[in-house]
Length: 316
Image (tube, rainbow, N blue to C red; front, side, top):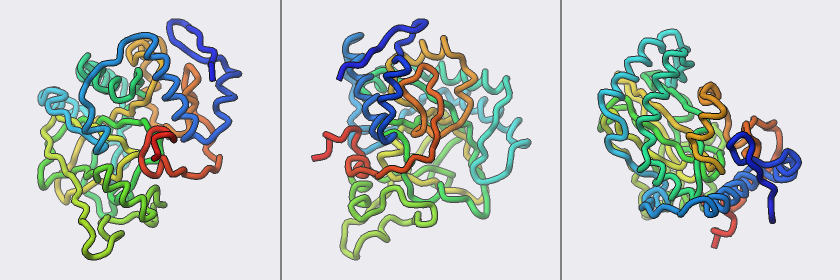
């Protein structure tokens, strides 16, 4: 199907009437269709980079060592500490940044989003990407940490990427995020454990299998301040680990496909929207400003999503 795309103040965009028609589907479907359109646009603008993203494609996660400098990571962690005391206290404190902290975050982000990183993400997506928003998070000791500390997948667009920049070290005895490989996530999906309600999330994935079945061994990356994990939160199971004494600071980038380079979008649409957390499944990707949508629409989780594919035709 041909779609009418035009240049609006330097950014490619759809007309409103086209966007309305494309949104008349489940959000999992219309995000996948938008991803496909972004790939078509990208192929007409530039040559596709040839970067090895097999780890992210095949396992659902990867690690970037020294993504930011240790000095830069520690500096941002200290900035968190100056503001987190006035934030609500729970296991995952989402920091509402001051203007000074917003500028600090953007300084770190611009340093990290190098040409090499751009090629990696564009190679994985097959198109340009955008930063939908940042999450500034401090995870700390808490008696009842919540359901992020049980195995789950995020019900997000299937192409979505999380880049989690560690601002503090994460070793064997530190707060961390565990990952189940894509193959093991698919084994769990075949057992019906896909996007379970919070009340049915579990701590041990091996509870799903019989004695004698191959054991699922989660991956726990060991990271220094400035390292980053990159993972696909809707494709693979993951969970947090809390610590009785230590805290963990991270800067999380929520990244989605785009018809426009990330820098062009920031330059024209501004920075403030990057500090508004939201559900990325329920947004209109076709609109220039990517507004949020009502979240009351019911839909089924198709098999291609259950098994962690980007597009329906990948299900074989």
